[in-house]
Image (cartoon, rainbow, N blue to C red; front, side, top):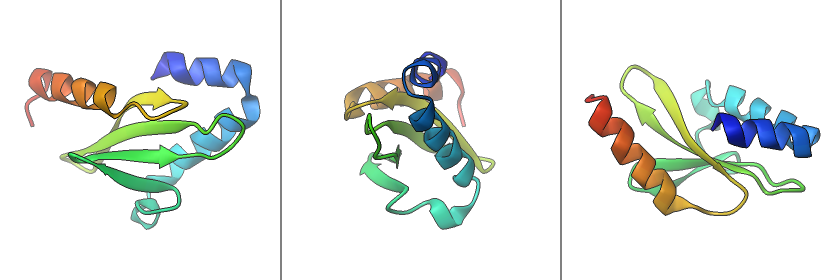
Length: 94
């Protein structure tokens, strides 16, 4: 995630700012729905930012009202996010 955000910040600061604002909005349940966020199945969600790069942040909810951002993409990469989710859950039993 950090590499994706660092790259986005360098390549397009405006899109980076919009993605960071979107991540901040996820603190409120009011934004856990389209157009900002939507379910993509298997308890995965995507934060959607349609801008110059059509950036998406894939995430899931963790017990304790936490959100774990898994992967940043400029196109859909559901399989990668599912693999990272499984890996995190294996290492951090809920």
